[in-house]
Image (tube, rainbow, N blue to C red):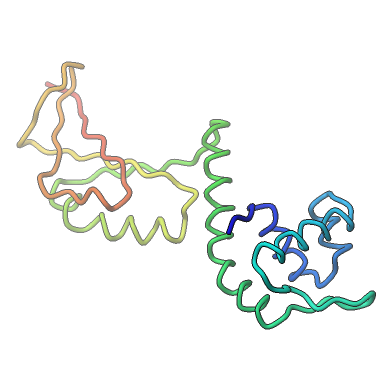
Length: 164
């Protein structure tokens, strides 16, 4: 079964507005064009999504179930596309955190992971400073990488500070 994100968005808008005309307006297409999208989606799925008359549009039981299942995925897709678009246009938002190696390795990864769940529009950079465990990268700066830093926290680690 194949369907497009446009069909899924159309389905969500019709369910939200309970109107093909208002959903079509939100999509900047004609109501007949929207009807084609929904009919094609229904054909691909093998069941009706809406009970519709000339005056009312209501979700079927299968349509209600599909709406509940697909809402989180569509929200995630829309948020990701928006973040990527902002980054491509150079408007990404960054937060930089400086700390010690122990805090970077043990405290910040779960905290930053939770923060990213609430603010997925922000990118993170972690900067660590220490008097021990320094290495040079040839740039005239020295740095280190915490040995126990959790890579899966979704944080880019930049370890740098000026050499003396």
